[in-house]
Length: 229
Image (cartoon, rainbow, N blue to C red; front, side):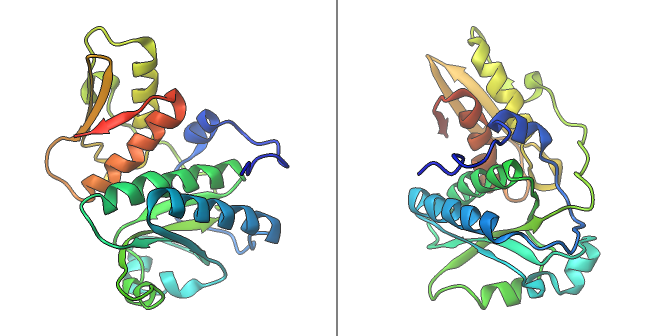
């Protein structure tokens, strides 16, 4: 399935560069034709990742809570739900395929924000199927702004790359633009014997989900496989 055939959209690298977390949205609804494309991408990601990714449109209940207001969210009427059967790699897969959908939404001109805590978890859990676990949700819509970049780490801070080819640094740079919980960037890449390895570094929240997100950024830009240790 080629989801981009009918639209002249930004490249994946342009989407990675343009994407910033956005918490305040306009009331403009997502058009029907874009919903169709987003739903098709969500279904594709669900099948590939063995997870359940779906989108709730025109549903403010997911962010109707004191926590959401505390998190400075405004007019979140659409959101992506990352759910499925819990196993050892569940959070990793949700991060990977959730970010694939996030970047596709960016290519369509929409904005997003990964949300681990500051939403109405009780109401979202009510719409899950029996036996499913909730990983996170992702706010979706037309942002009041395009968000802003935050100061992050350097390639040297997050990688070990003796004798690595040029594409390795390109991939790490793409990974550094990935959203991580509280911008913690607690991951490390290593290039060893022609292979790219990725692991968590230190203690933090949502580390496995973060690994999935940064893995997708690296692979989407370089076309190279990342092995998560």
